Length: 362
Ligand SMILES: [Zn+2]
Ligand SMILES: [Zn+2]
Image 1 (cartoon, protein in one colour):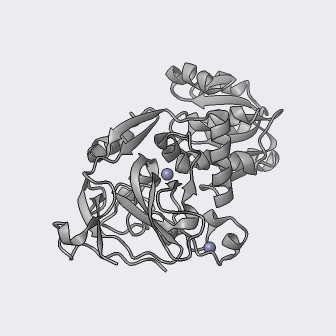
Image 2 (cartoon, helix red, strand yellow; image 1 turned 120 degrees about the horizontal axis):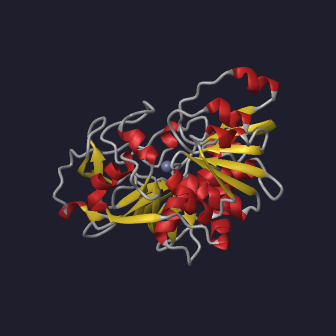
Image 3 (spheres, rainbow, N blue to C red; image 1 turned 120 degrees about the vertical axis):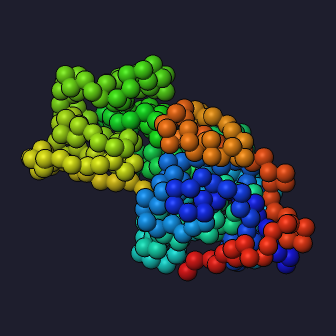
């Protein structure tokens, strides 16, 4: 097999703007697929990775994990995908398939999660990516690629806890924060039939929240209005980051209610209400492969779609800046405008072989 060169955009060091970057495409393992990328969403997690917030990233880093593209090559053991299939790929591009969580079908909790990332060795802000084919999901034919891209991370991130906590009719849920995750969470929760309250520190988002399907809107800074919601919600889904009025928010939970954190907010609170009301605080991370497939069907059936700004991938740094400055409404998706999305033969690529030859993890 000839060597293949992939063109992408990489941060060469912590916090740096992305630069054009070429690398040799990894050899396909028997379960792997190579996907030619047409679209890739920009997620806050990409920016956290560029800033090495999690402390798990190797540089140069090609971020990008809300991927849509076409299967360009398949490994010898891939049976469910064929060349030309349109697929979506999220943050998780593989898993160990052997630990207790993988064996239970909860691959997002894989014990070996760090090398499971789609951006290992290099991610979706590029012409192609190699992942385990079991983590590349065939897309509903009528779903636009930019919509599917966002659903691959933001979509499953909000859908998974709604299913886990069996949110449905007769239940009351509050979505805290109306941004990339929050505006999708409102849509999914509404489609599941529950009573949805949007809580945001931006009163200007009220009409949008109602249009997405919220039944009520509360200004997070309006303590009097928050105070009227005591013991109201079965579930609080926090999609915001930064500090919150945690104690006021916890008071809005019913006894034995649950607060689910989806972003990475700073949490500091008095434990009294937590104990006395038997509350639960938990996190939720991505979703399993089966949840991903279910989410795609549900989103298609209910017409759930993120609000998207489309930009050419060559303007990736501008896109990242918009997300950093919280100006994106609500998700940015990059369209690949590389001359030939896909892979080119190394013999014709003007790249030195010294460009990293990535090793597959594990
Ligand atoms: Zn993400
Ligand atoms: Zn595992």
